[in-house]
Length: 332
Ligand SMILES: NC(=O)c1ccc[n+]([C@@H]2O[C@H](COP(=O)([O-])OP(=O)(O)OC[C@H]3O[C@@H](n4cnc5c(N)ncnc54)[C@H](O)[C@@H]3O)[C@@H](O)[C@H]2O)c1
Ligand SMILES: N[C@@H](CCO)C(=O)O
Image (cartoon, rainbow, N blue to C red; front, side):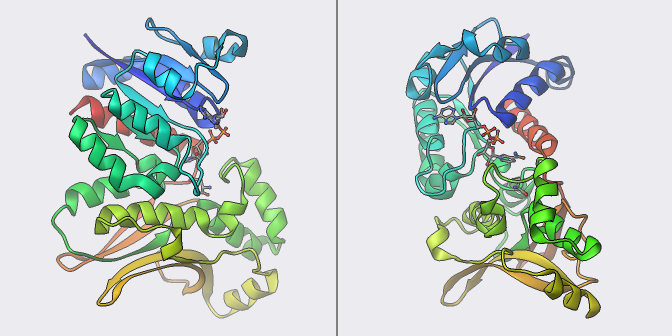
């Protein structure tokens, strides 16, 4: 039986949950794909743990077992692995630490699965080119609305299509907050506290509220669709911080639903990209989403309008998406 060895960089909420899922689903995965998954290394910012025989969640829980400084390039160079999963923080200014992990992993011939967003946002084109030259894959659906198979759709089903516009709801937290403010007449702060308790917000929820989470996800999708390297500087971004219960009540009375919408369109003068609060007709698919769900509306010259909706913002959806990435890599 073939074994695929996995290294996880970033042993936080998602990194640990992925280790649990790989451990618990190893038998079922082997039955489906004929390959045994084994986690052979895990690290956080301060140190790491290696074991070619396989690491269990119990071993990882013992932080004292971590070797100091076995992190970063040191970790990538020493771990015996076929795939590196990068689950560190999302830094939209430097792309680190994801960029350095991916660079080192690709240079060593490892496939890469990104959970964090920064590296693909800022250096996606360059990383994909490096990976192509090395004959390895980069999977990054978890870096952009994990639950929606947007990257797969664009890279496969629409590989030859002419994409004209992509718009959507990409931050479950903002719809959740806006819906709560509408249905319970509560303040934004109260609704945010509830979203945080449900674990759907970013580690720093400011990035959900100010539109940056939506912007970064959409830019990663748009860069795949339009084969560009747009950054936050190319987009006008505003969020929901200043919306009041009164604004929402007025919209509600007019048969409208507030949603934070991101859109990127190809125009004759270039690409127009924006994130802003919009008041949609209640009948609009993007208005009718379940609160934590996301949706993308993709307009192509050949197929018209295609809608992808669902993929609730949650840790479980992200882990399930990472398992899909693992399955796709073992099938290469
Ligand atoms: N929570 C979600 O539902 C979700 C969904 C999709 C993507 N993400 C992304 O997943 C990533 C992780 O989220 P989380 O909730 O697990 O955050 P977290 O803060 O719980 O975990 C991050 C981990 O990364 C580690 N880390 C920091 N710097 C590091 C370095 N240089 N090398 C190795 N490890 C380092 C930290 O020690 C920590 O263990 C974030 O980038 C987030 O944007 C989260
Ligand atoms: N904060 C994000 C989590 C998933 O990236 C959201 O609300 O959709």
